[in-house]
Amino acid sequence: MSNINPYSVTDVGVPAAFADEDARAGFIRRTYTHLLGAVLALVALEMVLFAVIPENTMMGLMQRINPLSWLVVLAVFMGVSWLARSWAESDTSRSMQYVGLGLYVVAEALILFPLLYLAVKFVGPETPFIAGVITLVCFGGLTMFVFVTRADLASWGKFLFLGGIAAMGAIVIGAFMGFSLGLWFSVAMVALACGYILYDTSNVLHHYRTEQHVAASLALFASVVLLFWYVLRILMYFAESE
Image 1: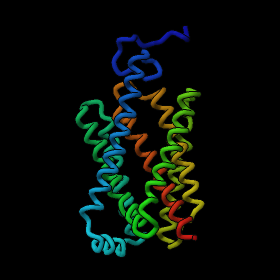
Image 2: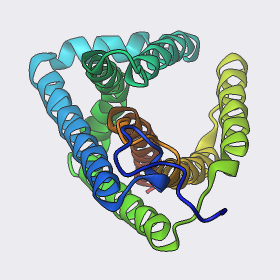
Image 3: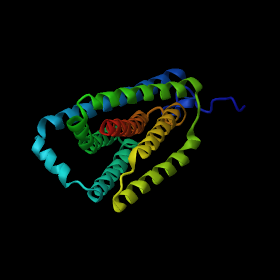
Image 4: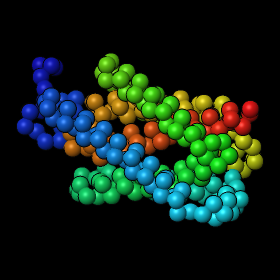
């Protein structure tokens, strides 16, 4: 009896692990199509920001940013992220789910832009591209691992959450104490982002319902951008050390 599927093939919105093959494949396809769309939208927004913000304006803004003001920016970003995720996970309105995903993409574009500007201006315009390629390769390898092994990594959630709390604590302490977290913090954050990609991909296969492709794509998008951020930081660190 334990091997009997508790859901019928006609059920709508069942967990992907219990859905019939066509429904599961459709859900996975929609999830990764939306992920690709979010990434392309992020790239387009960054290109627009580079085109419309004058260099002197950006340099003035960069000079005004200090660790404490950056904490305020992070706090606002976390609040917007929570709102966007809650909308994307909404069961009441598909349009609200897309608003949540769009809001998150815009928030990521705004918070990522200063780092991209520094990378392009002071390291080289090819640096974000290299970071993007590394991120894509890592994401592809991690995704393939989960799809091949069919591993259910739901138990990782609490450990990743604790890792995120520890990272935020380190950022806050560093801001107030006035010290740089350095290369090894970025390496640890890359490991955390990879863990989140494995966890999110596992949830796509096993725990998201088949109508939750917007929420699933947002979770994957957040993990991919986190990985890209710290890969870019590492590349910038090595370029500055030369």
